[in-house]
Length: 365
Image 1 (cartoon, rainbow, N blue to C red):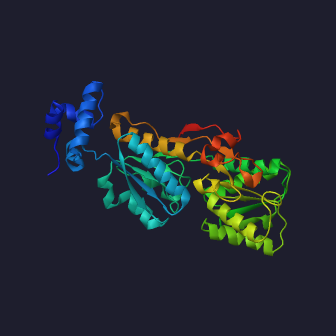
Image 2: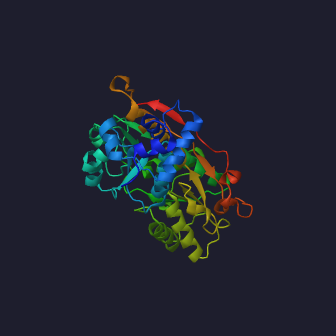
Image 3: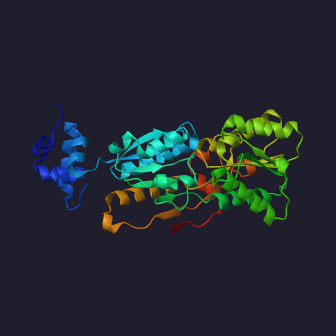
């Protein structure tokens, strides 16, 4: 049998109520008492009974996170950031992988796992604007990503268009005028990440007075190293002239760098490359890859905080849905001529980032 509240209370010389207050991180417990209880918890190996706590409070202390695929670097790092943000607030995270499948995404909103969590962070890729009503669920829900706007839920997303424009403007500022885009969607009818970033690319070219060349815009789906490399090889094989590449995410960009290296194209001397997402791996590619940092850690922090607010609020206090976009920044590395001191990528990207950013906003939907 594991240690009980009674055991901890007896070892710490306090009441069961005091132990419960410490476990639930309630205020108004003297620091010395709190420390004594925590020492007793550690020594006895006490673990709270989540099921029993849920029966008493109606809450489990667990939040859900539904993402398309954990093998994709961005979502793996997002999940890590969410777990850390939740842990700082005394919550655990139950992760579900939808594989971007429409039925699995719908199941995440109404499936049997919901009773295990107090609320859900949800990042859909197959549901669209027409599915907005599916988001009207009886649990606290915070939407991540771009797929649905104006729905009945809080929404934390990125400055996809303006940050993509800033990435292309960074390349233009280097004197590059034949900028290829790798990762264009097969259709830009929906408000997907790809279509929004393509809009930013077009805006930057238009503002610079450069005509769009369809030969430079390449579809690559799904967004991974292989499709990024293949799209780049097609550009090279077709002898389309280009002096820069904007990859719509970093894993595409890693494929781009591989193809350019195999073709003997020098980066950044012949072709400059910038990606999007600022995943950890982009710091360790050769050359290291410049990227848009969309504020992933801030997205995780804000999303967890919004979800916990929704979990704790009373029905009569319910606020209108909110849409929040954290700041972004352009991180300059070797692939666009940025000069990093030795091992800078192991210390702090901020020392080599530009000030290009867009202000965050909170808008009532």
